Image 1 (cartoon, rainbow, N blue to C red):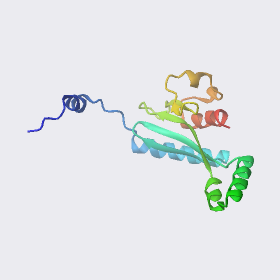
Image 2: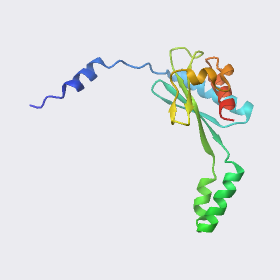
Image 3: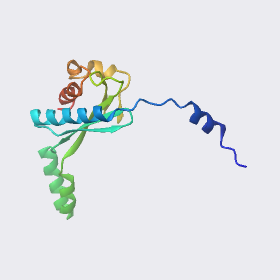
Image 4: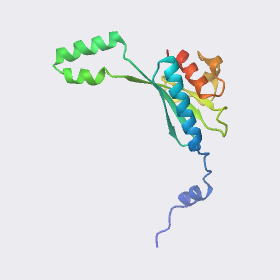
Length: 149
């Protein structure tokens, strides 16, 4: 008879269930993102995983960067690769943490220097756009426009 490791048993028994975002709240957040995109002519998106809503924006590549890629691809004879590199570029803005109220999300900005989400609140207090953070999805996107223009 094989006995599962003790750690597995304790983890299974004592795992705290994380709050799950209700479907209605996800649908409402997606509608807010779509309305924001229409108003500001941007391409934000929100993806949900567990208790988090991950905000990002699809941006057109910088013209100078695109020109450099085009020249390098031409010199290397790889024009087909250039086409793949000149599409929209994802800019991670941050994640929204569900805490049970659709008007009081917690915002964790994405920190590109460490490729992580800031969870201590230090960056969110002093970052550009901090004044826009009001607990709403729209506030997080407005803050993201200032944080990552």
